[in-house]
Image (cartoon, rainbow, N blue to C red; front, side):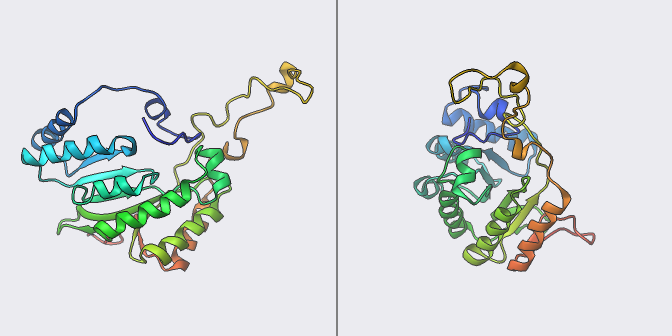
Amino acid sequence: MCNLRCVFCQNHDISHQRNGMDLTPEELGDWYMKLQEVGNVHNINLITPEHVVPQVALSILHARSQGLRIPIIYNTSSYDSLESIALLDGLVDIYLPDFKVWEPSTSKRLLKADDYAATARESIKAMHAQVGDLCFTGDGIAKSGVLVRHLVMPGLEEEGAKIMRWLAEEVSRDVFVNVMEQYRPSAHVGKVQTRRKTHRGEEEAEGDKQEKRRYAEINRAVKGEEVESVRKAAERAGLWRFCDPPRHDGFNI
């Protein structure tokens, strides 16, 4: 599940529907231990747990009492309350927040939450206050800090630029940023609008209905120049730590 309802969600089959299994916090913590001991993983990555933060906190405490040593990643949409972030202080090593869109009108239409950007700004600043900029072990594995992701969307590159400027000016010019280009129409985007009425209350003819597709403005892949526009805006703002392949035999810092 998820506390947003993004109309373009690429994981809508699990985030908009109640698929999966029920676990107590202790059972969830036991899974962390199995992953550490049997899976030999680098971290525990909790994806969009905003709506179950108290249970997540209890699961981490349980696992640490059993010997959990690897970092905890809180992978979030950033639609978090400050109370939730405070509850995670000292429990989360790496925050992995999305910052999706900037304008309230956009978030109301596409995320179904008109206060998204204001909430994201508060929560990302609180995350950064806890763990700071992203840092790594000697062999290049992330160990603590914040990494902010932004999925560039069709026609919304100016909102992406505003997000980059805000990160540089209000969070840190050393914040690690992933400008992502993998947007594709999914979930409700592009679906035929099957029930539509005229101003007289009459349903449109079948042929008319087939011409109407939902969220048509984002019903395409993102263009390379849109991604490049956001990346250049980030660089102009003073950001310099990006998720790029390293230009040497080492790893990104």
